[in-house]
Image (cartoon, rainbow over all chains, first blue to last red):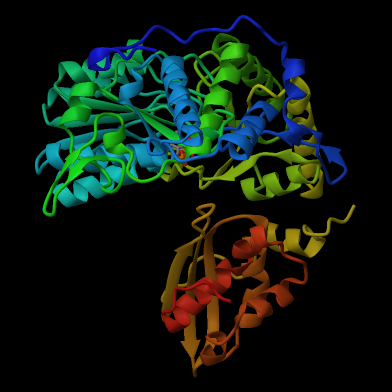
Length: 425
Length: 127
Ligand SMILES: Cc1ncc(COP(=O)(O)O)c(C=O)c1O
């Protein structure tokens, strides 16, 4: 696959023809055969981390069993094979989101991808008097790196508010940008708590017009909907493989000019061109930002996960998520005392449904759901500023992926009813 | 139906917590949270003759953390402050009278953590 100059987007993800019905998909996930507490497993925590299809597990096992070697160094056959599979995965992953593979950097996870930008771009481009603009719905990993940066540089960290509909106000964005001090806008593509799908293309456009650099946290977007980085056109886009049916490895996609100008993030082997006693020169993109030995099998495993998702088709994955969210939004209010959070309806939200129940703490909700093998998340979801906006300490959250079906929502509603009985509500 | 974890008395203490609220004025106080779930708990203590003469917990949290605070508060009133500072995790679990899984252990220990914080200044989790 030829690389494209200038970080320009590549054609949209190639779509393999074979389309599987979602019932068949379930057979690909070995974990769904498990029984817990005498009940078949209902996994409703994919927004935290998704389960893996055997295609991913087998790809990694095959690699470790027969082709393992380190990449970019071995002259021998194993090294060549490993490099080919590793770089092949990078190319397919980049193509899946429509970006240049040379500007697609493997990181440990989304958190590291965001930190890479905060350190390697932020330290040289943000100073006292500048502003970094994030939003009240960010995950801690798109808050704390900017807090650290602002503390160090004397810049000011500002938050765009989340309005009652669970959305961001673009008018407020315009007002803040018009003040002329914002150097960076960092925003989630999809909220991991509310599920809100933010208009990131529009936000990027307005930020750029105001002279700000943009970073989009796509950790919740890439796993569950078609993402075209060319159309969004952000300067940086970060996401994480373990929520996309793959292993724990992350990606940072960046604009070539910026990546070229930036100093490296971590120094060490593999990221250099030449090391002298007192200085070094850097390897080409993307390796300049990949110091040390990569998580090779994880990258290859993520390649398999992306192939798997592309085979289903991301439009269908999105439609499936929307349908399940709509069904959950319809059924959950049957539970007495239940409050839903996030945008009205399922059209503007990902497959994420947060809720609380009067008189029962989310921790206890999750504990009692587990009695019926229904896995839901409870807590602040690494979004404590958002929790304060919602006026709660914690929520429970159900989230979906390709392996979930409507019966899973029925099982959740049943478990919540049983939980209310235990609490004598 | 009796539940192994959510026993009647646990739910009773959760729904009708003893010694909850604020205590003004007070001699000792401490406030902390469970970083896993964001639950918060604070305590106000009045000391007389080296003993806990009165205490009030306040904050929000799950049934286990709230019930533990409530149940232990009844034992803590009248206890010498010096003795409070020596209490450990086992004491709390014993007071609770139920088995606590590793995932809920911090919920159960939060109230002792703030009690120890108030009486010794030590903010670490009880062992
Ligand atoms: C919106 C969002 N951003 C960032 C992250 C961080 O991902 P990771 O822990 O893989 O770095 C998550 C998930 O935990 C998330 O939901």
